Length: 507
Image (cartoon, rainbow, N blue to C red):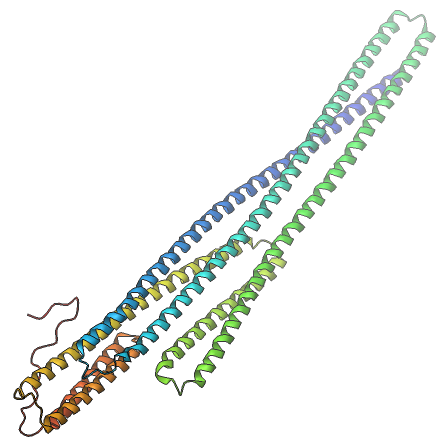
C-alpha cells in the first residue's frame, strides 16, 4: 500500500510538472508570435509612413515641375516680347537714319542690312538655345518623375507582400490559438482524470475501512485500480508527448518559414537598391556621352570657325568667344557629371558593403535636384539680364550715334548758311563740299561698323561712341583745313548735346 501511494504521488508530481512545462512552452511560443506580429505591424507602419512621405515628395516634385514649366513659359514669352521689340526697333532706326541723312550724303540706305541680319541671326540662336534648354529641363523632370513612380510602385508591392505575410502570420496565430485551446481542453481532461483518480482513492480508502475482512478482494481491486491508473497515466503522457512533438515540429517549420521570408525580403531589397543605383549610373553615363558628343560638336565648330577666321574676323570674334564659353561651360558640366558619376560609384560600393545608405542617397538626390533648379533659375536670370543689358546698350549707342550725327548735320547746315547764301557754289566750295561729303561718308561708315559690333559691356559701347565722335572731329578738322582762305571757319557747336530719351536737359 505504501508503494502504491508513493507511485501515485510520484505520478501526480510528474503529471503536474509536464503540464507546467507545457503551459510555459505554450506561453513562450505565444509571446514569440506576438512579438513577431508586433514587429511586422511596426514595419508595416514604417512602410506606410515611407509611402506617405514618398507620395508627398512626389506631389512636391510635381508642383515644382509645374512651377519650373511655368517659369520657363514665362521666360519664353518675355524673350519673345524682347525679341519682338528688338525686331521692331530695327526698321524704326532705319527710318530714323533715312530721315536724318539726306540722299546727297547717304546714297546707300541698304548699309543697315548687315546689322539687321546679325540681329536676326542672334535672335534665332537665342530662341534655339532657350528652346533646347527648356526641352532638356522638361525631359529631365519627366525622367525623374518616372523614376519616382517606379520606386513608388516597388514600395507599394513590398507593402502588399508584407501585408500578405502579416495575414499569413495572423492565420498562423489563430491556428496556434486554436491549438492552445485544444491543449487547454486536454489539460482540463487531465484535471478531470486526476479528480477521478482522487475519487477512486477516496472510494478505495472507504472500502478499505469498510471491508477489512476481505483483504484479498481489496488487494485485487487495488491492483486493478493501479493498473487502470497506470494505463490512463501512460495514455495521457503519450498523448501529451505526441502533441508536444507536433507543436515543436510546427514551431520549427514556422521559424524556418520566417527565416526564409526574411532572407527573401533582404535579397529583394538589395536587388531593388542595386537596380536603382545601376539605373542612376547608366543615366550618368548617358549624360556623360551626350555631353562628350556636345563637346566634340563644339570643338568641330570651333575648328571650322578658326579656318574661316581670316575671311570673317570682324563678325566671328564674338561667336568664337561664345563657343569658347559654351565649351568651358560644357567642360565644367562634364566634370561635374564625372564627379557625380564617381560619387555614384562610391555609393554603389558602399551599398554593396552596407545597405544602410538609403537616407544619404535620397538627400544627395534632393540636393542635386535643388542645385539643378537653382542653376536653371540663375541661367534664366542671367539670360534675361544679358538680353536687357544688350538691348539697352544698343539703344543708348544708337541714340548717341544719331544725336552725334544730327548735331554734325546741324553744324554742317549752319556752316553752309554762313558761306554767303550763294546758290551756285564755287570751285573751292565744291571741293569743300566733296571733302565734307567724304568725311560724312567716313562717319557713316564708322557708324555702320560700330553698329555691327556687339556691345558686350558698357565700356565697349562707350568706346565705340568715343571712336565715332573722334572720327567726326577729324573729318571736321580736315574740312576746315581744306576750306579756301576767303571762307569763314566752320562754327563749332557751343550748345551741349540734346538729352537722351528718359533724361532731363541741364538747366
